[in-house]
Image 1 (cartoon, rainbow, N blue to C red):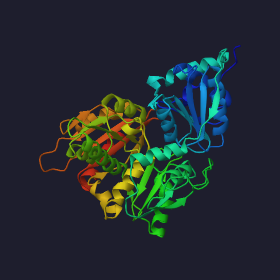
Image 2 (image 1 turned 180 degrees about the vertical axis):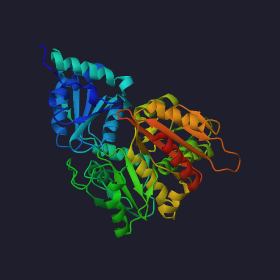
Image 3 (image 1 turned 90 degrees about the horizontal axis):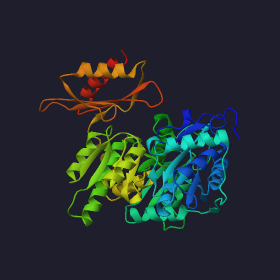
Image 4 (image 1 turned 45 degrees about the vertical axis):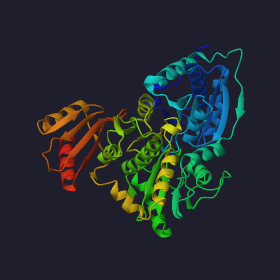
Length: 474
């Protein structure tokens, strides 16, 4: 039976996931239709699918509605309940089943969303299935869900202990020196996963790590600050606490705990590119110890610091430069057999974690590296942050193509151009002159150009950054 004026799914089904306002865009009816469409798209009738959710108030009822739609189309639902996003990747990988995670990550409490995976934690982007899920769900909203004669089953599984144990097998923290760590979970899922993985909440042996918890209470209203550590305002409390407690470092997780940000003993942020370089080196050394010959590939996106590719090459591995975007990197991890991938947004991908991203695993590698040497984290951070960087600077522009064309014209003859993802401009400097580069990428959803720049010296960075911004904003 046709329904009048169903909600249009187009505005909130994005390039990599679903992300919308609760009540006006995401409703239980919409979510039920998406559950049915997901089972159809991944051909899961008669097979298991994983459904997990974060601590947002709407997440449990959305997970239940999704399960109802999925079972109507024959999916056998495995409910894993409250979890981090990387727990759903663990369940998808270890059970080799498609998965749906209800979270809006770092977005405010008024939002929720869904991250989808195929079996084995393989990503689903707009181009590789998400558009088809949207279109199927739109039809179900208009015409109703047709239930199969053999509707699916449902069971509940707790994967937290197995998840924690698996990560402990990947990174040995038993023999590091005693360290004190402040962890800001932002009232997100890190409040559940950190005690399980880095402490004894999941029944694992105690580690030489003293955890000082901040905002571990699961609360989807985010009463202390938004669970978005990429915004400097949201790590101020962590920076203060590290100094107050004389901690060795601080960790901040986003709402669904799949990204981890780091501050040193002085309260200064450690660049995600520096973290990527540290983890890449550890993974290369580990793999090379058992594989003396053969190529080793490591992925980095095009806005990571130059130090990442330099570290990979110096360790005898091959850097693979990619677009920005987690589904794209997951695809490249599978295509190249890369052992690790790092993004400047603090997403870190591991071959031994089914090619999926895992902020906790990256944090464990950093703790292992830091805890195996005597220097403070600020020294380690400086070693892997030798260049000056702008961070991401957004500019509102009326005509993105015209602004990009102005940049190309202005730097013609003094730079090389690369259109892998937006426009990367790399200075053709003479020997002995400081290098510089910058990238401008358009936003997928807003009239913005995003600028990221890096140079060998701060003065060179300032000059290049200011010149590029003047051209963009002309």
